[in-house]
Image (cartoon, rainbow, N blue to C red):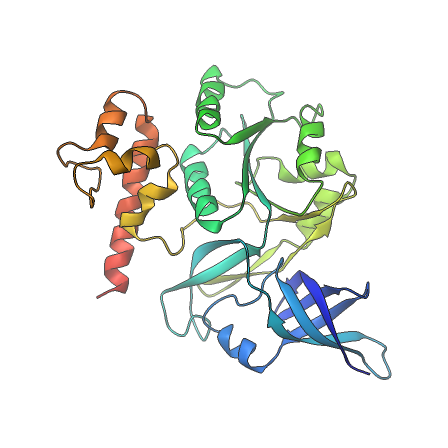
Length: 323
């Protein structure tokens, strides 16, 4: 007999969604009607979404099945722009790919050495994180047991001055893991960062097999130019859920216009209201408070250059899509 239940989407694979329902069971569900149509142009459902389902037990097999009837509003959504082909995206060059919905914190994991941290990628992830509405953005500097340049510590201290929490960890020695585990105890946490940063090793050190479980359900498969993914939330023994994303080399930010970008750089944002012109691009305008702050060393020159590069990239994209 079918019943209506509320639940959490904990796994997504090939158009199916596993919903952990309020009755303690997990049901394999499809989107119903209208939602399936909407999913052609955006990720209408993703891991972390709260759903209402119609659930039943299949006769003969006893399999727990269901249909997602509605989805609750999201309080956060971490997305990236993804190129598309075929039906997904309905011919648009890019569509929103939701990495996770309703995450309570995002942990951006980078290695101190082997490989050294890609700070341009970190800046882009922080912009995506600021856009996402995720309440808690943390930076994890892993592999601190290795020899690395003292400049790395100075650079990450700069992120701390911006207000970001930086955790220094060693999966090999166990340094910093107590602080990391305490951050994961409640809600939904997503790990992301480049390959080789040691995300899996960190998770395995906290809970044997956890990293392997997360990694096994975080694999990706290519379909033309659009990358689909199988993704899942995994329960952490200390409480809460953990989601991993495969190692990434770059991220294309989603739904930020070039003139909005300065608001998502937390070190630039405090100065924009002091610029002479309300539409200041912070490139060459007179009486630009941002340029003055860069010249005085209040904004790191590297961060400012990264801002200019990303702004130009967004501007080119904006021009193409609004012709």
